[in-house]
Image (cartoon, rainbow, N blue to C red; front, side, top):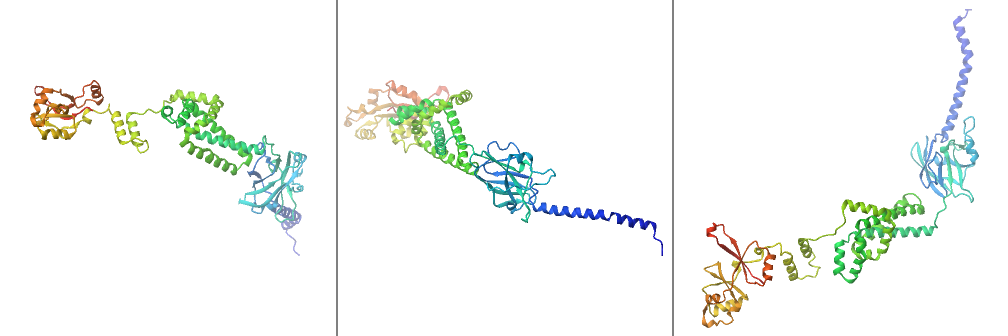
Length: 504
């Protein structure tokens, strides 16, 4: 028999000595795998819990512990690994004592301890919204505290998905939820609702008065006081003192509007709870009842509404005086005081034209007003009658029946007399001069004009109408003859007659 090799004998002995080490490692690995599978069945990878929607208790947000108000349904965002839509079946909350919280939720060897009895006072509702494998949204019903309790502490528990494993309590302050009682409201519910309605009315009043009063011009108010109806005069007299302080009034109304809207939002938050309901309710209420309706009303009846609420306006001007008055003084220094609208002649005339169908003025009245307003801006050339349109008689005419009948039929009281050409006016015939003239006598016209010898007055084309009016006021009312200077040398200076201007 051959002798064994020495090296091979040593190798076999080593294998025999260390096989039990490998067997122990395999056993430990298999037990660790079983434990890992059991932990994977738990939602053991949970590492965060956050309030998604609902009312937090007062003082929340100071630490990792989640604080909720009692008697509500909240949505909690759960963060972890292996999260799915069935997570709500494997998650629960257990009530803890303060002593348990101080001792900790882990044993000394680091393993999770068993979960106490699951509480019905904080119950996970059916259904979970898992947007991704690491996050799910749970709906949790938080019931009201028992009588005499101010707060209760709950801990997060989870179990394996198979259902045979027990519930284990998670460790750490992040897994603790403290439910606190709702603070006692300062006012009864009905009083808070009534106060919200009053604030909404005040919001509408401030918004409407801001548009209605500020749209009333100080100049217009003075006009209404002098020429409006009796009711309008009374309203204008009531508004004019506060409207005179435009910047102070504006600051008071805006400050009151902002203060009321902010208070209303806070009050609705206490009545309806935080969330989209409060946002929608406050937005709809303020926009419709606090902005649109009052501004539509005051834009048409600002004078009447402003006069009827003038006492409230003065009260809030006094109430906001410490803040609104200094701001108004700064605005006065920076922008100057409000002077009111000033209408020029052109604007007054255009305003009469635009409002013609509703202002009650007849066409003749409007023409007279237009002529009076344009008196300083027009010259005699703009209003004189051209020579070609004038009725005139020649200087060598005979006052027979035909000529005198023609003069009478025209209806004019003053007739220009020309020689050779119409631009050469040499005299003026007054119709009253023909009172004692017999048509059968055929008296030459020149005889009558020389006898009365009425003076002729020439004016330049650029003479303004107001200057001519002043001359007429002096009692001189013969017709004016408009002339243009020719461009000939001074030695041959002459006046070219183009138009005639007759006094009224």
